[in-house]
Length: 324
Image (cartoon, rainbow, N blue to C red):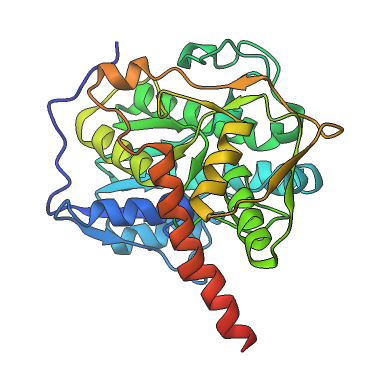
């Protein structure tokens, strides 16, 4: 049975954040700065996590005691559809190499990260952890989903056979500072922020949004997600993976309204109903996380405002400087 652990301290430990340059990894580095630990990062140009010899050699030298495995090959529908071999191979190898090396080198604790795409396309709403492997996956990102499911099962297998303290979490849709704002590759929150900002600057009369705006989605601020991960690393030890979410969702139309207010854009919105909506609702059940003593703290309105400020400070201004 899952349980809260007697307590695993990160203080004075060597903690490796694998994938520290990504959205989640960056938030984990920020969160861990208050834990009194030594934060380890592996240089991407020197350590290829797809190579078992690279991983074991680096880990044998760095000697991490705890690991947050946030490194992954990620992308949107187009990337998944056009590069399926990369998405399944790269993610399988990254997870397998880090897990095996962690076992061989005696790492004290390891956390693997899942993704909401691991659940069946037509899962019950809100989605409990028990829905895993109960139905067909969404075809557009099945390659990534299969790899992340394998990662969860890998951690469970090493726990069962070798007694390793390996745990897994499943954060829902994330957004926040450090996100990808490239309109060809980004997810809905950064894409809408970038669109609204461009429309405001250009004084465009409206922005276009795909779909009807009626479907519901949830969005977890990435620093809340990092807080949940650190909390579970310190307080949870069990085979079952744990959903992390905000506990509430909004329609896409409501999200667009919040984004426009955060940006200060006062134009209109045109919904392109010829474009697909996707699933009517996609929200995770967070009762398990709540029973373990954790809940998200950042309201969507506040998180969007902070993310927009980061976008202006780090993307818009840096782009302007580069052009100048």
